[in-house]
Amino acid sequence: MISSLRAVLAAFLLLSAGSAWAGAPGERLEKVVILSRHGVRAAMSSPERLEEASARAWPRFSVPPGHLTARGEVLASLMGGYFRERYVAEGLLGQDDCGAAYYWANVTQRTIATARAVSRTLSPGCAVAVGTAGEGRVDPMFEPVKAGVVVADADLARAAVAGRAGGDLVAWSASHRDAIERLDALLMQCPVGPCPPSPGKRRILDAKPGFVDGEDLASLSGPEAFASGVTESLLMAWADGQDFAGQGWRGLDEDALTRVFALHQAEFDLRLRTPYVARTLGGHLARRILATLEAGVEPVRAGQGDAIGPPDARIVFVAGHDGTLAVLGGLLRMEWTLPGYQPNQIEPGGALVFERWRRADGVRVIRARFTGQSLRQLREATPLSRAVPPLATPVFIPGCSTATPAFDCPLDRFEAVVSQALAS
Image 1 (cartoon, one colour):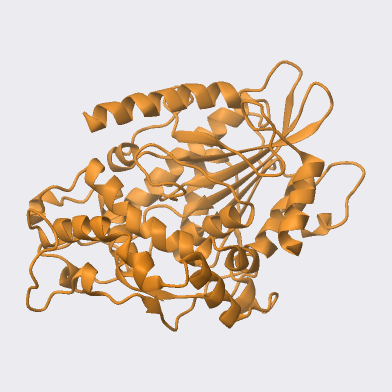
Image 2: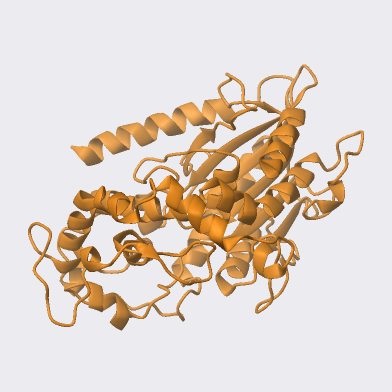
């Protein structure tokens, strides 16, 4: 029953979203920025480490930890082909238009490989060079603190995160007890959580909430942080088409995945979407995206030299990480939900898309949406087209969007909202 309702909701969302994004008579699409998470990757932890948190064996990936898988490359190519079909239909791209798209990726193998896979179908037949700062280096657009372009106050970051949790991380975590026990039952394969302790196993619910030293401004410990890594590994293996049933897993399906993602999202929201953290980590990126969307608009505005790619690029594709999209979403207070996922979840290949339109009245507006493949489209590597698109939903930008189907955000207001977010 739940799956049937989800299918109906997904179909309705696709139909309504498609009508909202189609250009009206007299409108012209001028520029697109696609900020995408990388595609399906191998788990970051070894199978042996993951098996400490489960009663069953974990599938093995055929690539090193964190690398884009062969399935991930295929899925990214499907998204690239969909983007091409959509933007050719909107008149933004021509059939032989190799200079129209520009690609930039963060410095990891999975982001660079994702951008390359997308470019092969979004810019077919073109000699495309994916821009990157280079593996092993630091790109300020993705890691501004580590790159030294932003100075962060780690104490203030922890205080801000703690404040959003009501000042008590233990009580905050206790509010997720049902979700913790549900995930424990799935991992330890008992009928109802909490499952009894097992020798050599680490239970989600035994993790102690608090702050820990780490690479993030406010790294967390506790059931949510533990669950975040484990459920991401479940998602990646599921999307990679791995055979969980063959490993003896019971009860792992799309509905179970949707439910257990709640802990990951709770941790992600607290750690990355807290306003001080989001502004610190996402401000430089927001400034670059604003400059890119304003490129080519007369009169030339201050800051356009920060644009990503050449000014005449009509599509700019940026491959980053789920955290990249999370901090930008938190900074601009943007929210989204796709069927089968938790609110603000960013699945492999999920993307925030910013389109600059010139309406018939001459007003330039930004139309934002979040798009990505459904759990089923990921697992089955479903071919995508305008007739069979990925999931998508329009995104409202507070302080800017208007009461129109696509939440039109006037370009000058978008500039003001970004500037205000960076100054607050």
